[in-house]
Amino acid sequence: MPQTRMQAPLTPQQAEEYEGTPRLEIRNLRRNFEGRAVVDDVSLRVLPGQVTCLLGPSGCGKSTTLRIIAGVEMQDEGQIFVDGKLICDTVFRVPPERREIGLMFQDFALFPHLTVGDNVAFGLKGPKEQKRARARELLDRVSLGRYIDDYPHELSGGEQQRVALARALAPRPKIMLMDEPFSGLDNRLRDGIRDETLSLLKEEDTAVLLVTHEPEEAMRMADEIALMRDGRIVQQGAPYNVYTRPVDKAAVAFFSDVNTLPATVNGALAQTPFGQFLAPGYPDGAAVEIVFRPQHIRLDFDRNGSGPEATARDGVAARGVVQRARFLGNESLVEFRMDFDGSVLKVTVPNVFLPAEGRVMWLTLPRNRCFVFPR
Image (tube, rainbow, N blue to C red; front, top):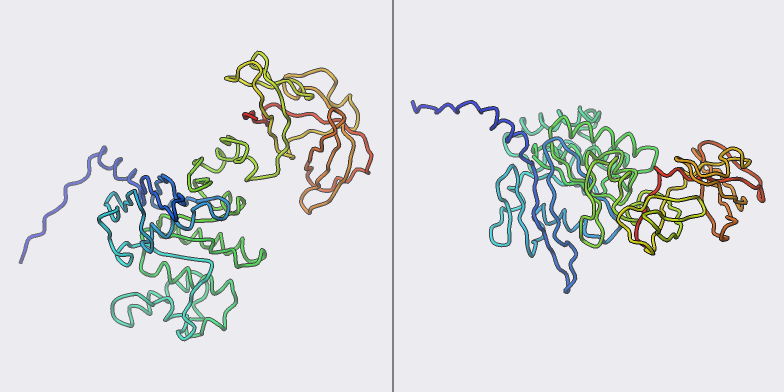
């Protein structure tokens, strides 16, 4: 009987290095179409059990990046690693079916002529009983075990999405690539199914790379967000950091509406009708923009609420006249025509707040909620 060699236990240093090994790593991926860089020097790492969102507008290269990782499209430059092992560069290429990568797309692509159970078991190897047992296990976990012998057309859209998830998880992939898989669901179903999907993927310790153009979805699901624009990752980090420490005005605007104020720097201070804002690193005379979100403006009915004098936190109160107010459900949007230059600023307020058109109010702008960028 052949002897089995026992593996030596890992040292603490080796264990730490192993735990830190990304399940998926891509390095310097590039893909050109007709001379245009659709994916331009993209690098990222996804750990086991981690959800990373590729977030960006349509046409920025998100889906192309996913197809390259899946192996259905080839990169012009760059490398892809799974558990530290090279699976693809411009010379060496592991076939898609051997990459241990699952795929989920907006189109569930269920086979209409196969039962729900056979759809989930499709692609599995082994005895029929074993494949059916795996299908039943996953269908039970997504609360669809009773439909194992039904056909896809007999299920709702949300149920079909869960079948597609079970099918993608059946081979126990190390990595799950998801290309806007929830966009076809109505809002009533989307949040619940998203949360169920995320819970199941984390239970399986699967590394997830999710493509979406919806900031709310990325913030809700992701452990890390990679913000893409024009084929490049322009910012990457935890959702809180990407939201509160944007790299530029476009990054702020991708997550919410923005207001902007033009300003000129003097003595590392930007001069505005709302007072002075710190602008370190900008030379005197530099043209900048003060960028801030509508929910961060403070409103008062009279000037005494904020005071005409500059304060350390809120600066100077500026007079505005209500142009329009609308109730949006969880918040109200109020638009003000500002006295200082006639510009319109948008303000959002929680709950119902509908001041009459023509109402005069005083606006102040907390400094710690503003960003200064080159104009």
